[in-house]
Image (tube, one colour):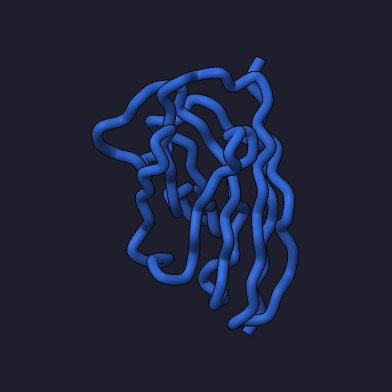
Length: 125
């Protein structure tokens, strides 16, 4: 059974930083993509950043230069370092995993088949 559990959310002022973590268990795929997605209140879920089993990354334009996705050497924990946070970054952030190789749509939530419960990030102005 694959379990993804996010942590690290919270409230921060604009310009501040947060680091999200996602602990993965039972995820033994050799080829995969893992990503961070967010859902602002009243809006659809959107892709933020993703990384594959070879370390290739993909970022949404809105977070390029501010957010960094990474994974530990054992590839059991996924991270999202968020700097220069803006009020528009306020959302519930989800960790997700696709147990197969993707060639397109790295930030398309429909391509991911495992999801965490989410962690709230609130950025005040």
